[in-house]
Structures are given as structure tokens and as C-alpha cells.
Amino acid sequence: MENFEASSLVIIALGAFLLPLLAERIKIPGIVLEIAYGIIVGPVLGLVTTSEFISGLAILGFLLLMFLSGFEIDLETFREKGIKTLTLPLVIYLGTVISSFYIISSLEYPLFLALVLCTTSVDIVITVLRSDDTIKTKYGQTLFIIALLADILTLLAATVYASFVGSGTLSINNLNVVFYFIVVILILRIVKRVAWWNPQLFSRMFDGNDPEELGIRSSLALMLTLVGISVLFDIEPILGAFLAGTIFAFTFSNRGSLESSLKGFSYGFLIPIFFINIGLNYDISVFKETQFFIEVVNLFLIAVGVKFLPSVLLIFSKIKFRDIFAAGFLLSARFSLIIAMAEIGVHLNLMTIELEQQIILLAVLTATFSPVLFRIIRSKTS
Image (cartoon, rainbow, N blue to C red; front, side, top):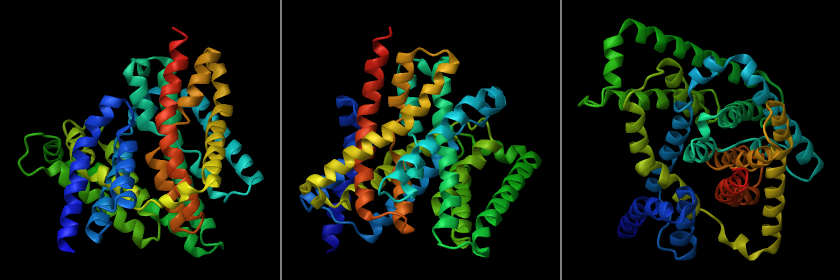
């Protein structure tokens, strides 16, 4: 048994190393290959099974993924842009929420799915926009802010929704969310005050030559602290990880080499294990059912629709209709957060495991095809 677990680790390690190289060559997101790899070496070939150790690494990778999602938020963008610039992205996000809840409520889907479909993959949006310097234009900045707001507000809304609806009743326990955010705000104020009192100590955190790696230690300490507090308040741990990253982003606008160090540490190994583990636990028996693929196609159409309809509002920014059409496809790209939201839904019995399997495949489809369609449509405008 121990030999089998050791070989499983070797296979997973090889995948984590080789898959990004293959993804770069064939021009598809590495995350897609990691899930597919997990399915192949797990359910298909039976070479790897999930152990407690692998699951533990996957959970840590999951928390780091959410931490970095918050860590990468550039709050200076919101300060510089001002409220007026955020008005249209906020209206578009609210349009997505309204469209999603209207469509989902009219169909036989759990209502929590409406929130799940409000997500957007900021990573994919930024990567695509940066590939041709579109990120520097007003058009690119608008899409970036729309995607960023979608992820931030959806995650916060899901936490509140899970607290009030997941319990099935309104009780004093629902105040846990309020108390939790009070504690988070207090921690934020403490961190900012300590940083102001001890600038030399905190400057050491962002020194790439620090032999003690104080920056990584403090980042993980803050993340695990907020995760632990979230557990005490009966709130999803991923919110704690996300808010820990946001606190860092809010407190330290210039993070030096710490960001690249954390990304290398996280994306280099632990986060790929999380996505490979998703594949290891995937129920491939659903692939034998035609109805499964019909449901995925239906979800795909809904997922694109709830982004397309509000994107029409971009016309008020004097954006060409073809660019608006392209934006609808790019904003339809979803991946890490939608999978995280699906896991929350299953954990709280707000959706079925079968629906989660469909959402994972939906994420793979949108992450693969949305950027391609965006580039095709945009190329016709040049």
C-alpha cells in the first residue's frame, strides 16, 4: 500500500512538472490538462488513487489558489479609477446576477447555481488581454474591472447566501458572517498599524534575499489564521484564504519579489495537485450518459448567455459592437472560482455531485474556447 502511494506521488509530481510545458506547446490552459491528467491516471488507468496525504496537499493548494486570487487584486486600480469608472462594470455585474437568477429560477436548477454562474476567470481574462497589450487600453481595463468585480462580489455574495439559505432558517447563527467580517476588519487595522509602526520589519518581508523568507511565512500565517477563524465562525475556509490575500493587497501596494515567490511556491506544485486531484475524483461513468452531455451543453449556453446579455451595456462606453460580442465570450471564461463555488454548493447540500461534475466540464469548455473565440472575433476588427 505504501509503495502504491509512493508511486502515486511520483506520477502526480511528473504531471505537475510536464503538463505546463505541453500546455504551452498546444496553446490551451494548463489547468485543463491537469484535470484531464488526473482523470487519465486515476479513474481511467487506475494508476493513482487519492490518499489522505494527497488530499491534504490538494486542500492546501486550493487555499493558496484563493489566497493568491485575493493577493493579486490591485486595489490601487479602484482608487485611481474612481466610483464613476466603476459604475458601468457594477451595472454589468448586477445585470449578470439578475439574468442568472431569472434564467436559473425558470429552469429546474438549484438556485445556488445562479451565483455560481456569475463568476468569471480573472486569470484567463488578464492573460488574454495581456497577450496583445489590450490590457493597456480603455477596452481592456473595462473588461479587467468587470471580471475582477465579478469574482470578488460573487464570492462574498456566496458566503452570505450560504449562511442564510444553507441553514434553511434565519437565526442568530446567521450573524456569524457579520461577526466574521468585523474580526477581519480588526485584523486589517492591526496589520496596517503594525506595518506603520515597524516599517523596517515589513520591508524585510519583501526582500528577495531574506534567508528566513519572512514574507512567505507571514503570508501563510495570515492565510491560515483567517482560515482557522472562518472555521470557528462556521464560514467556508476559502473566504478566509481569499480575504487574507485581499488584506495583503490592501496593506502593501508594493509587494516586491514576494508575489513572484508565492506564485512560484504555489503554482509550481501545490495548486496543480489541487486540479489533478479534481480529475482523480471525477466520476467518469457520467461520460456514458448522453443526457450528461446534453446538460453540459445547456449549462454552457446559459453560462455564455448570462455574460452576453449584460455585456451589451458596453455600448455606452462607445465600444464597437464586434468588440462587445468578443467581450461576451471572454467574460464567459470560468475556471478556478467556479469549481470552488461548486464544491461549496455540494458541501452545503445546495447542489448535487452530478451538477458539480457538469460544472467542472463546463469550466474546461469555457476556459478552452472562450479565449479562442475572443481572439478570432477581435482579429476581424483589425
